[in-house]
Structures are given as structure tokens and as C-alpha cells.
Image (tube, rainbow, N blue to C red; front, side, top):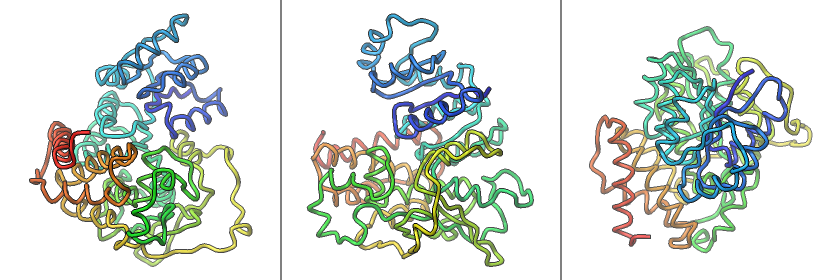
Length: 393
């Protein structure tokens, strides 16, 4: 029986992870549930999965959840960052599903690695902002980290079976480049002037994927693909010149690897996150399909095109952050978090999101090799800077 710690259990990845647990009750159990503020859903999850440890980050939601579960016993209830860290490091579980959104997810992943938990990673910020810290820690503690993002899972699956060259994140001399696919989001083919009129509701109408709010907005700006470039660089040991982004509107080829001999190996499937989650949980084994099967005759045609960097400038900003390195990826990420939050509140327009990111990057004094405190401080400083520029929200 594999015991899971699901960090971000009420979000899109977390709830789909728990659907897989329902499919395999004899092989998977839940020891830890952690969420941000959705006390009502977390209560239902506690009653169903009976974890030993629970954390709800928001203090007011903690009081709500404590009241809701007053008739239950047999589990500890924590709150705040200290609660997250205790659950990550002290709880009795085997695999952390790291699906907390935002930079608050970095420290729990570090604590889980130090406690020698296997990591199934869905939190992009962990590697984008702290890849230079995380990757040596994985080596030091002998911990495996399996990607949950569909694109990185596809790349990982494309590399499985090759002659051993060390852990996957050390890179592979046979890789010529990674082909990282993007759907193009709901605004593919639109101009900046057209996008100025688009609302939050428009940005959340993704043509293929059902995801959380922030990830869906990041897909619409192509920020998501920029973050995934940085993740792929750390996971597979390649630089920006060996990652090519391809817009693939059908979202059937989830990514591919081009090898030095010209062969291209990729992974195809329906746009459904359950496959990469399940693969990370059971690797190296494969289980029965939990989603809709792929019918290539029904798809008929697959299209691929270059990304539009003029009307979607966030992608070029991400490439700049990746090439600059140091603290710049943290600036990119924190500025985007601020901008997306402001857009959701109706305080800025959709096309202001990349403008916020560029302004923050242009003003930042680079730190070459930030430690964890430097990474987290950079995030706070970026937020404070943008609050000063745009007005405190």
C-alpha cells in the first residue's frame, strides 16, 4: 500500500489524484491532506479518505474546518506554513503529490525531500524559482522526483527505456532538443488589440483542458509554457537553446524528444491529467486507463505552428528569464502571480499581465545564486514593487 500526502488536495490536480485513489483502494491510501482555504471540500475529503494529518493554510479557514470536523477524531489539524512543513516532514507517508499553487509550495517540497519522500511534482514554482536548490537536494537525499505536468510526463515517458545515463534530471547526451507543445490557449490567433477587450470569463474558456483558474489564465498568456520551459531545463538538463515550443491546438501530442540521430519520440493521449498523475504514482508500472481512450481516426489531423511571440510577449520574457538565470526566474514568476491576481480582481486588463512582468524584470537587480531565503525574499520584493507602481491592492 502506497501512502500519499496530497498537498493542494482541493485544487484541480489534487482532486484528480484523489479520483485515482478511489480507483485503486487496495494500492493507494491518503495519509496527508493539505489545502489553502476550501474548508467545505476539505471536510468531505477528510471524511472519505480518513487521513492522519491535515493542514489548511488559511487561519480563518482553519477555524471553519475545526468546527466542521469537531465530531471526528484520529487526525491532527494544522494551519499556516509551519503546519505545512510539519505535515511534509513528520507525517508518515511515502509520496508527496506537490500540487500547491504558488511559491508557498517550495518549502514543503524541500522538507519532504529531506524526509526522503518520493516527489510527484505538479508545483511549477518549485523548479522555476528554486531548481538550483532542489536538484542537488534530490541527489543528496537519494530522492526520486517524477513530473506530473502532462508535458514533462510526456518527455519523461519518451526517455524511459534508453540506456542508463544517470538520473533523468542530469540530462541525456542523446537529446538534440525537447519539443514542448502548447495548445495556444483560448486566444490563439488573436492580436494584442483584440485581447485588450477580453475578460476573465473569456480567459477561462480553455479549448481543451479543464484546469485551475491560475493555470488556465497562464495558458492564455503563454506564461505557462514559459514556466514549463524552465522546469524542463532543470528536469532534463537542457538549456533554452535545446527547447523548442510548438503550438499544437489539438493537445494530442503532449510533448516529444528529438534525438541526435533525428528520431523523434513523443507521447500522445487525450487532454486528461489523470494519465500523468497515475504514471507518476505508479512508475515504472502502468495501470489500466482511467480516462477516455485516444481515437486517432476521430482526431484525423494534427497541426503544429510557431508560437506568436509578438502578440504573446510573455513567452519571450520567460526565455529571457531562463537565459539570465539566478533570481530572474523568481521575478518572472512572482510578477506573474501578482498580475494574475490583479486581473482576476478586475484591477488590470489581460494585456497588462506581461507588462507587469516586464516592468518587474527591468527593475530587478540580479542575484546570481540566491539561497532559499533569497528566492522567497525576491518574490516578496517583486510584489511590493508592483504594489507601489500600480497601487496597493
